[in-house]
View (cartoon, rainbow, N blue to C red):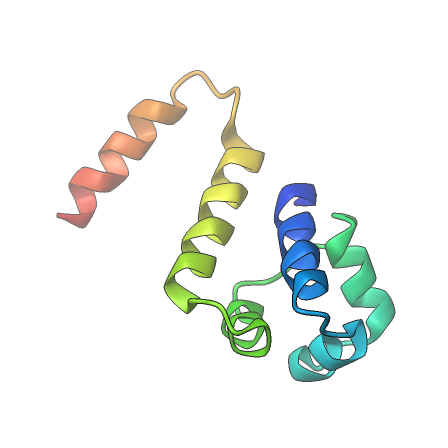
Length: 95
């Protein structure tokens, strides 16, 4: 999955807060070129990075995790004929 939307979202927040890539990369224990690729949608963020991103960007962890999971689901499964029905089933299983 290439998450261009999520990467762009992260980049926009980072730039609006004038946080250098090197600071975010350091917090995530990755190099700046990897962060750049994430922001461009060429590499994925993994779920373990979400907490670090929320902390370094000073944004709500819950909101960021929801955006990440939503974007991932939409990116991977949009166009599947039974996607909505599968989401309904997931919701029932979570109750």
